Length: 152
Ligand code: SF4
Ligand code: SF4
Image (cartoon, rainbow, N blue to C red; front, side):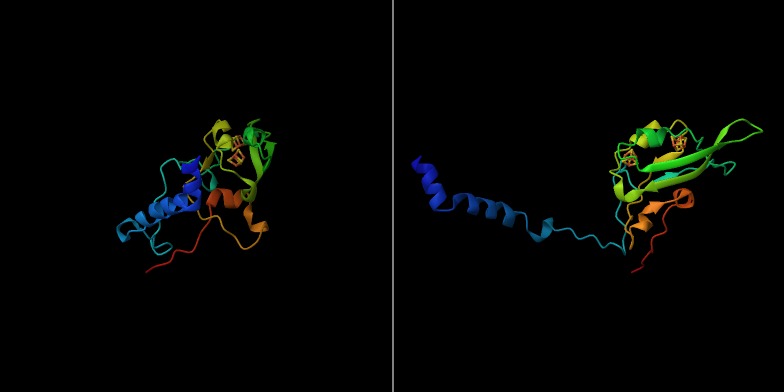
């Protein structure tokens, strides 16, 4: 009781906290990233900008228009439409909208995709000047963002 009282009077907790803070402020512990001149390496399992992958051999979309990604998304932020090809009788994706401003990058859509078409890539630069710019259409989803690359 008295010990707790004295600790409070002499601000012991405050000084202990400050000791920890200053101990970790030694110049040898300080690390400054020179972004955007030098781009940081993100973790291997980082989930960033979404991408709709194309078949590397044919350049055709891998998406089969199944809508599973939209159904799996807890935010319901994916809106896609598909049409059925009369010749092949297969569904193909027609339009695709992805609202990146509402995405929490949980990866559930990516997990649900049966054709590895939808991927959350390691691209981390998602800032835009408008809210509308955060809604990506099919073209943007296939080509990906093109952020400005700065040089030293
Ligand atoms: S990462 Fe999660 S929140 Fe974002 S679109 Fe996919 S399922 Fe939805
Ligand atoms: S991205 Fe994948 S899950 Fe979404 S509609 Fe296309 S194939 Fe289906």
